[in-house]
Length: 130
Image 1 (cartoon, rainbow, N blue to C red):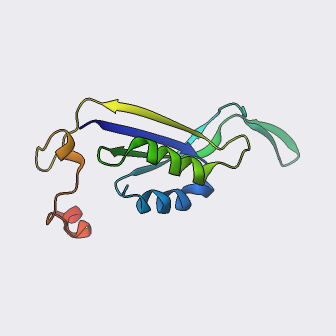
Image 2: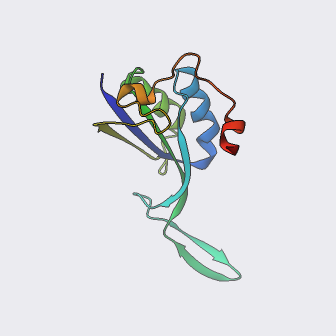
């Protein structure tokens, strides 16, 4: 089974809608970061205390997820449907084929490292204190 990493960079205002839509198709594991970048829009000008400044980097969010059972095309379709406004700044999606993954706690590798293991759910809050 193939392991694929998907990076989605988009507007911060779309994060909750994107997370909800991905959860509905079974994508639960994800990492979200606040990032800054410049794409085709190349930033914009802002006025602060009467002076004009060129803002080259625009705030975005980056959502990263790894899938093996859920079809990549389904993830791409859902993300585009939620994120597309038709305006500059909608973002980009990058797709990478992974050669391996390792679950540090158990040593599982490959697909086993990213799949849910029935009966292995635990209270995350208590395990993070240890």
